[in-house]
Length: 49
Image (cartoon, rainbow, N blue to C red):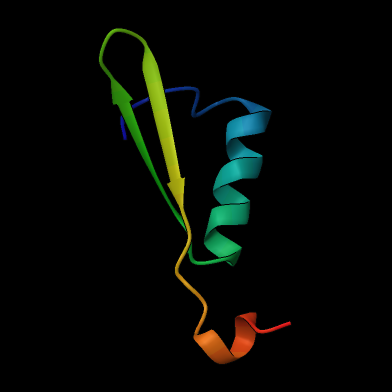
């Protein structure tokens, strides 16, 4: 992931949330910075309303 905003409060909050929800972040530096956040899918039984 490198050092992209690692010292910022916002990035720290995002990392904390991702850790609690088993999420992931992919940060890429190509013509700017792009961050893609993903979370695991819930089983179908848990998503029915």
